[in-house]
Image (cartoon, rainbow, N blue to C red; front, side):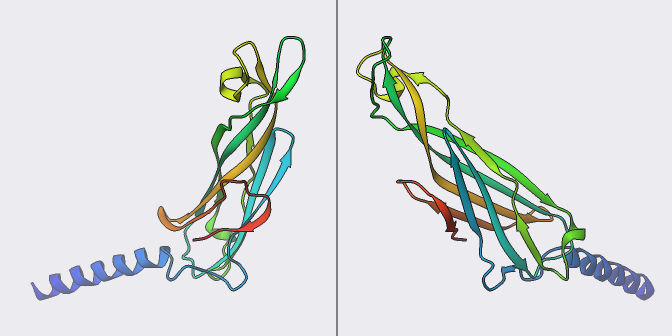
Length: 180
């Protein structure tokens, strides 16, 4: 009986020790490696990528999801081609893109990454009512897109390590830091 208990506890200890080595020990962002994102606007679309440097990771794959959302403002155009500024913000998104990093890319629990780009694109036209045009005979055209929210979720081995966000109701531009 005693021998059986020793084998049982030894097996349980080995399983517990193995499982812990696959998960992050004390994940954190390295000094100067906190997440930042960059938005590049091109007409009616915007592309967002994020970078960061992590330490204290385990030896499992890292899964990152970047999600963006915002709004577009349209110019109102009537059947005769006359235009007037629209008044409504038309919500756009969310759009997401995953970035998967294999455990083989981690070096001693460290990882510097750049996410796959997330592209948010506004529809080329919307109804006059959606754009805030003077009447239903108008159409919203020539959208100007603004990104207002960026979210970065970093997981390892199926466990969420960090949920980072940046938000500005007036729009995010250029390169900016996220809060985790």
